[in-house]
Length: 509
Image 1 (cartoon, rainbow, N blue to C red):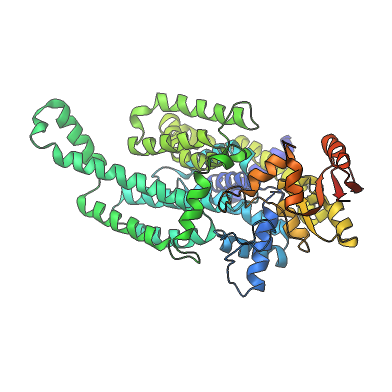
Image 2: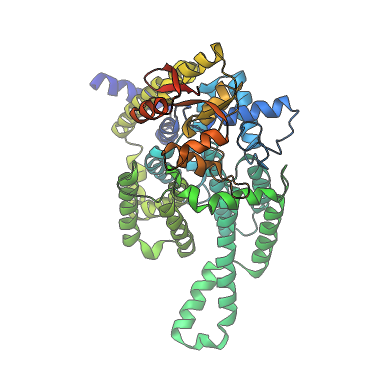
């Protein structure tokens, strides 16, 4: 260890210790964000991209992948993401896609606080804390692009607050122009921007309305506070116009105003939100719940200690997104990104230069380098094999690759029933057969028919569940090889023609 330290100290003579910390810190965030490409929705994203290439980059107007809802007016709100992901996976492989996803995530956790006028060391430390809290919800997912979008909006807002004459405010419309074509999370960014504009308008008009009330001590203090915190009327007018332009540019997408129908249907669908894990409320008993609660407790303690020094407008906005985070796991990453500037400001004020000096200590850097090495080694050893082998990927993601290979060698005519969690994988790896359901469809509804509700009714074997099989003329079922399925399907006369440790195929007699 002594010899290693001597070599490391010698290396520091040629490099700036601060730069080494920044490189190590960003590397740690990057490798923590690196995840295997096993998300259940990745398959249909890649298939979407292939569809766009095969159809000369024309988006689908109705669903091309399912037999249950072929006439549903589908909205590929992630069409650009799907196209890029498909090209990357085809030309460079899934491991490269995982690397790029990790890079996007890491940039988001740093960019969000770059607009703050503090040392970069504190921003790196806050980013590390945020990414650790985000571990349960990281992955090769289109949602990571929305984290980058949120970070970009916050960065521009901080720059604008510090200098209302900055030209960076004109990046907002451009951000939303691209964002609306990459992911439906742009609506969260618009909501964030609208909150900021709304509270700035309130402060501005309160300040104007104080008038003679400033003779009273409290209103005099309030007036001074608002004048310090509120941007000028000219800057506010500019912000309102640019925000309106950002909103209008979100209509520049292949679906126009229908993009908002998709967003509002998904966000306010109570049935889907009560039956999908990532839409359920945060609970301390759910995976990652205790870690998130601990993160909030630590954040609350620091807020209590330095409350008077925190930007109150941003704090109010953060509490709005905290409420949304508790209402649904899907919103937790957005709150974590939004909370990063709070950490930066608090740690900077409480720790001062001592923490920045510590990050340049040789022993500290050595320990950090060792941590980065082992985290990188673990993440690459996990991600690389999964990304380079469909067999390993299917095993890691619990996908029915064996059953798919059997069906390709022994085709079965007629409609297929499949598990919800396997829909995306089947769209990707078994395009010969359209699926019954997949991860795009929980909120899809035509009239009174909702396929996700029908699926839940049938797979819980509730009353008259067999009528769904008969009504839809389903010829075979690709389902989990579970005790209940092994009892129920043969019990109604269906024949098992394939089974392994994960999946089973039953055929109608």
